[in-house]
Image 1 (cartoon, rainbow, N blue to C red):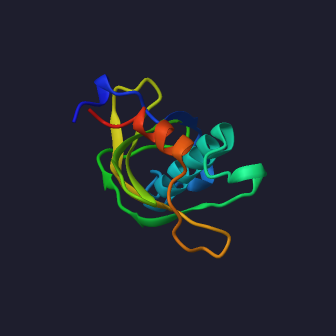
Image 2: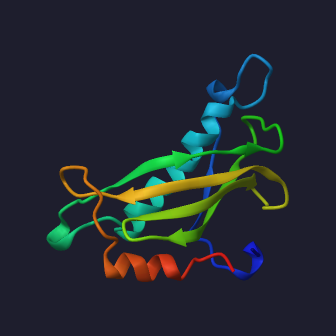
Length: 141
């Protein structure tokens, strides 16, 4: 899989806050999940992903998530959140999500997230054709 050859699903800058630090002076591991959530929510809001017909919100839920921490980070340095699609199923899709230094040179954390499209009753629902087409544009080569 080559990230350099594939268009990311999103590329969002996030700014750690001073309060995100733990007692050791680096960003607490829980915050990395929040940064990735912030980036996913921004992507969905900007693209209209998971909006049903006539603007009726269907939804996307996290079914699984994991991260490998590669480097300590500190609040005064921004992070770049990126994601690529690594699998598209009927109602779910899996992302490789990464956090980098702002310039993209240092990998800070990386892992997979499985998202499931759901209906108003929170039951899995097939990924809409338009959404599926958008996901296919960002499949990791």
